[in-house]
Every structure is written in C-alpha cells, then in structure tokens.
Image (cartoon, rainbow, N blue to C red; front, side):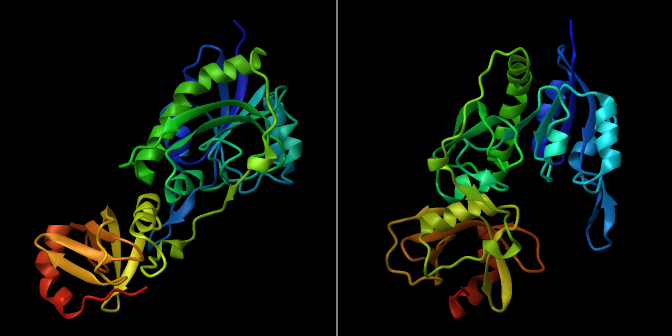
Length: 317
C-alpha cells in the first residue's frame, strides 16, 4: 500500500486530535511537524513548548520550529528534501507563503473551525458564540496564498448547545476535525473530492481577540449579548467590569430577560442571586473573580461582599 508523505503544521491544542489521527493512519506517513517556536510564559518569561510540540514528543515525529517561514531558504530546502505529497495545516499561526504551498505534489489542506466563507480569520469559534449562532462546524479547504479563501473540499456542520462556552466548543470542533481528517484527506489524495470555490458574497472575517475586548458595556449591551460575550471570552481574555476601583471578572452567568427594573450596571441581591442590570434584561453571575483573589461561586462571593454591594451597587462601564 502506498503511503502518502505528509508534513503537518500546527501549534495549539486544537491541532492535536487531527495530528493523532493522521499519525495512526495506514495510508499516511507524517514525516515532520512544523510548530511555532517555544514562547516565554509567566512572570519569569520561561520558555515553554507549544502544545503540539509537547504532544509530538510522545509519538516520536521530528519537530521543526522556524521563527519565520517566509523568505527562509534553509527551511524551504529542508522541506523540499522531505519530498512531501501534502501539507496539512491546522491552527498553526503563520501564513504559508506561495513558494511553500507549491512544494507538495498535492498542495496543502487547512482544517478551519467554521463553515467557510463565514468567519475567515483567527477567532471563528469566539465569533460564533459572540453572535449567538446555533450552528458552526469544520471546513476542509485547499489552501492558497490568501487567508482562508481557498476552495472547499468538505463542510461538516455542528450544532452549538445553549450551554456551550469557548472551552467546550473548541474541544468539540477539534475532536470533530480529528475524527474526519484521515478519511477526508485520503479521499482528496485519491481524487474522490472536488474542490468548490467559496461564495465571496457570503464571506465574513474575524480578527485576533485583544485583551481589552472583554470589557463589559452595561449601558449599550443587552443581557443576552453580554452572556454570549462571557461564553466566548472565558477563559481569555475574560469578561470584566470594575467595582470599587478593582477589576471584577464574570466567568459564568445566566440571563434573566424579564428584569426591567434595574438600571444598567446596578447590582441587586435577592437571596443567593445577584442581578446586574443591562440595556435589556439582567445578568445573573454564577462564578466571579475579584482582582487579586481566586475564582469563586456566587454564594461565596455574596457571603464576602454582601454589605459592600448594598453600600456600593454600581459597576463601572
């Protein structure tokens, strides 16, 4: 049986299920893995390997970590020497330049966490949650030199549950992409799939999430919009407000759309429930974290802050 020679590009945990599945495929040989360089982490800026690099150490495949891949002649020569049939790219973090895309006999396939052409870019999972979408999915795409604009090989839909957060949806889509990868890629290599151009009239884009994107605007957002933001931005960058000149993170919450008597950003305690007014409806925090303290559930938070809330019920923007 012919084994196709694949070079896998991936960095984050999202890529691991696909890498695992391909490394076990009878028809595919993963010759090397390309991942981002080790990154400084924490207060002491200690260099930490990427999740994919850590994982590859358990399956004994060579790892390449060029700082840049564009205009890198040594890296180009190394890949050319490996004579790849295909690149598989998932959550890598650098744009693959045209000269590299031309190296493999069958080009390059990207596995993307949305139903393209919707949510091209760096944060498709967050934006599906931010916008309250009921459906998302995985796209297998033939790569070109543009960002997420290549022809589509296969789309697989996935229903978003009402209690899904970024963490849960990220894991589900990663597993879905991994489970499908060997068969889809084998079908493509055997000529059983036809690549279809994307409908440009339906294209949307989403950029990188910034640290301050999690700031809650109580006056201009509804409870449902803020709830979607909490789902999308936990654990990073997290959704936060200010209270008594300190940052207060809301890590989990529910929505009460019937509340109309609270002004935006004003807190009200009813038993073990905390209501916060919004443009429309109220947010009911379930898990919070005060600046300098550990996360806690709402009951613990109220026990320690009951009198302070009664004396100072207004939150910042």
